[in-house]
Image (tube, rainbow over all chains, first blue to last red; front, side, top):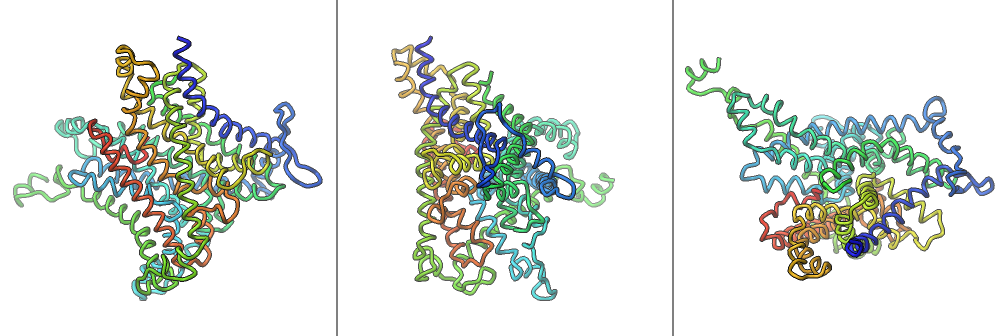
Length: 297
Length: 297
C-alpha cells in the first residue's frame, strides 16, 4: 500500500511544489506587503513576514478613503461593480439566445456555427480591442456609418471616457467565454424531454420557461462566474477604450498603485480586498468543478 | 382565432404556427456573429492599407508587412522582436506546463486523502483567480524580493506556467474520469508493473487529452496579456499583446494591425492543425467534437 502511493506522490510533487512556490507563496508576499510598513526615509514598502506582527495601517488607509471627501477608492470600486453587473447581464441577454439557437436549431449548420462562435475565443483580446479603437475614432467607421454618408454631421468622441463604451467593450470582450459553457449546458438537455413537453401541449415559450430554463440553471451560473470574475480584475479594457479617470475601475486602482514605491502597500491591500470580495464566488465555482471531477473529499 | 385563420386563409400566419421557424433567434445569432467577427475582419483588412490611415482605406498593399523599409513588421526590429518573443514564450511555457500538469493530474487523481485534495483546491483556485491577482503577486515577488527570479523572459515563462498549469490538469482529469481504472488493473493483472501500466496503457489513452491541452496552452499563451505585461522587463521582452496595448491609443500605423493579424493567423493555424491532429488521435473513440476543443474544461 505504501509503495503504491509513492508513485502518485512522486508524480504530483513537481506540480505541487510549483503551485506552492509560485502561487501560494506570492500571495503570502502580497499579504506581508499589505500588512507591512513604509520605510520612513526612502518611502519604499517594507514587508512584515511574521503574521504576529502585521500592522493593518494600509487597510485602515484604504478603508478610510472609500467614501467621503477624500474617498478616491470608493467611487472606482462601486463603478466597477456597476459596470460588471450591467456587462454580465448584457452578456447573458445576448449569449443565451445565441447558445440556445445553435444548440436547438443549429441543424446541418451546427458545426460551422460552432466554429464561428469559438473563433473570437482564439483571437487575442488586445486585437479585438484594437479593432474597436480604430472603428470608434472620431473619423472612424462607426461615426461614418451613423452620419449616413454625410447627411448628418456625427463627430462623437466615443473614446473620451464614456461609460457606455467601456461597458460595451466589456460585453464584446468577455461574451465568448460565456457562450461556450452555455452552449455546452444547453446541448446536454435531452431533446426527447423538450419533445415530450411540446407533445403534451406546452407552447414553445412555456417549454422553454418550464423545462429548458430550469435545466440550464447551473450552466447559466457557471458561465456568469466565468465572465464576472475576470471582468472585476480588468483594467486594460478601460485603458484602451477610455483612458479617463472618470471610468477607472478596481483593476486600474491596483495597476496605478503598484507603479509607485510609496503606494505599493496600498496596492497590495486593494488586491487583498479584491480577493476577499471575490472569494465566495470563486469558492462556489471551485466547489462545482470538484463535484464534476467526482474525486473531491 | 387560429382556426378561423386556418380555415379562411388555408394557412396560419407564421407567428401563430406552433412549429414556426425561430426567426428572431436566428436574427440574434447571425447579428451576434457579425458583431463579434466583422470588427476583427476590418482590423485585418486595414493591415493591408497602402496609406498610413487606420480610418480610411487608401488602396491595398503589403506595405506594412514587408514593403515599408523602416516601419513594416519585417523591417522594424521592435515589431519583429515582439512577434518572435511571443512565440518563444508560447513554446517554452507549453513545454514546461503540459508535462508538469499531466504528471500532477495523474498523481492527484490517484493519491487519495486530505493533502492531495488541498493541492487540488489550490490548483482550481489558480484557475478561477482573476489574472491581475496572480500577475501582481508575481510582480511583487520579482520586484520586491531578492530571489533568482527576475522580470523578463524567465519571469514571464514562470508566471505563464503557473497560470496555465490548471488547463492540462483539468482536461486530463476529466479524461481519467471517463477512462476509469479497469484498463490499468487489467494490465497489472496480466503482469505489467505499475509504471509500465501507466506508460503502456494509460498514457496512450491520454494522448488526445494531452495533445488538446498542448494546443490550448500554446494558443492561450500567445494571446495572454496581464501576466506578460506585469513581468516584462522593458521593450525587449514585450510580446505582441503588450505592444498593441502600449500603442493602440497613440497614433499607430497599420503596421500594428499587421502585427495583430500575424498573431491572429498564428493562433488560427495552431488551432486548426491542433483540431485536425486531435481528430486523428482520437479517431477510434468517436468523441472528437469541436466543443471539446474550445477550451471547454
